[in-house]
Length: 262
Image (tube, rainbow, N blue to C red; front, side, top):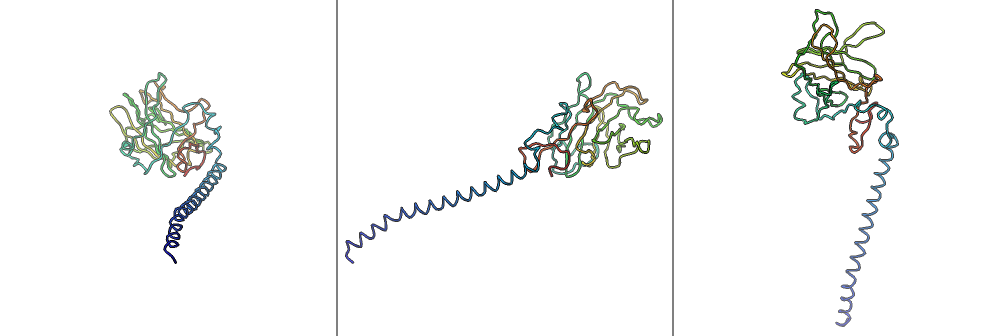
């Protein structure tokens, strides 16, 4: 082969290399685009299936929006369960913003924080009370002094305030016609310079998706009328819904009438 033909052949091969490279890049780009399209289709199908099974993620929940403002209580997701000892030391490093509870004159009465770990609901309540009236067993009254009350979807619990020690949550059993202690609700009282503090836990199923709290402040333990009070219970007597972030879809917020989010 003559030199001229050799040079021509080399030139043609050199000219063909950029064209072959462009063709290769086009094929790679098309393959990547096809892969991204398939991934988007799979994600869209998963989201559509999730929304179809939980329409409350995109539609207003009538159980929530029909309730008065402030009736709902927020459950902060907890990475580990706090130690229920009444001191609240496990809550402080979390930096959670408590819910402030005001009395009839709109003066601060208490602060409460709710959290959830697994199937348990936790509560830390701090009450400002310069004249705490603890339960006096000699009066024979279930709650003659300061009292904390919890309202769930099915029961009304009465918690007589104590200076320290184990919480006794009592509820009225209409079938037996007497008050009984709820052993599934566990808590501890501690006193503080500003009043008293309560830390407790109860199973989420016990709330039936609803929870309200009421604080009655008395200056004596003989059953005298409260001098002030604060409550999240609406006037119809039905507790507000518990709300929490959906851990699977963090941008969405849902109501938990049952175990919707794990």
